[in-house]
Length: 425
Image (spheres, rainbow, N blue to C red):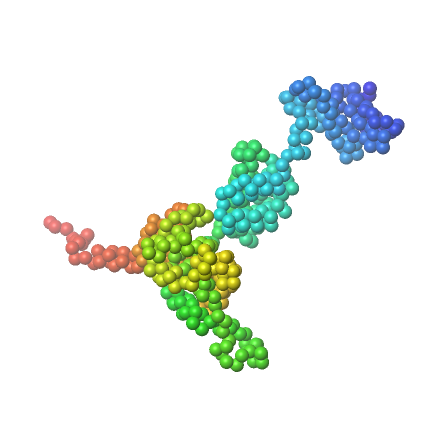
């Protein structure tokens, strides 16, 4: 039995049989020679249970004799510590991938604990960004550098990058709880989020007046066509300007008005059913918090008037049904498309439908509401969320600053004080 060296390995030729040439210097270390002539280094050992194991270290040509001997020595040290390299390798080969983790995360966590809108957003991020980047990696082998690379590659969209990071972090927290990864090894830990510029948009008094005028115009006459200058002389356009208007679904107009008078989210308004409405008690059953169960919520008189004036379709449960299919509520896309035209004519092209909710919070603050009351009005989970909606306008702060300045000025000019330069003898 020779001591394996480059000269010995090169001299071994295929003889039509599968055989192993064992090394005389290191028990268990050998060279496997296949009938095809392929040569690979192997290591044979007994694990802590006395079972014989054999594993391939690498093919000769890509691994030298010295490299193979060094690797065999390292593995034998592991064996002496009651480790089993073959079992570990098999476990790694069958270990769940990130794709497997994400599948379980979506079904066992997201679908059970998140609102439908959040579920859709998470699925989109998972399928469009996370799976293509790290889906094929082993869940227990993902490193912080893997995640940092993904996150830094999205620097141009900081808000989305941070959302991706949050999804990955939650998924790996679940992986630890499910035994797919060791505890306290979340690879997101320590990665700094990008600074986000939160959107600061609400309707001021003048803008609100313009929106109101356009809503009234749309209700009575329809909205004028948006005609480009290059199209103004085309023959197919109606000559009568009154004919160049498009009617707007009254349920769409009611939806936008309800957003302004309730501060509710669009999905909450669209899914509202008549069983959620009590006009006598002037209450609405709205989600107590985003994605949560419904609870009674007071409605103002303007909201009650809108609801009382709505046409009801027999057999339809929805407050805002589709005219052609009353068994379904108004589509989100229909309202958003109408809002695009309304905001164009109201000259507020950057205002989104969700900014109407910001407007409600801001006007509530102007009316003297504190963060606690406004938080209940908007049904926020915590006060910190409320502050994002109410601290938008400079007017209340300016009024407070003016009042403070007047009081300080009055105190400074008060005749009741004595000069610091005078004293009684």
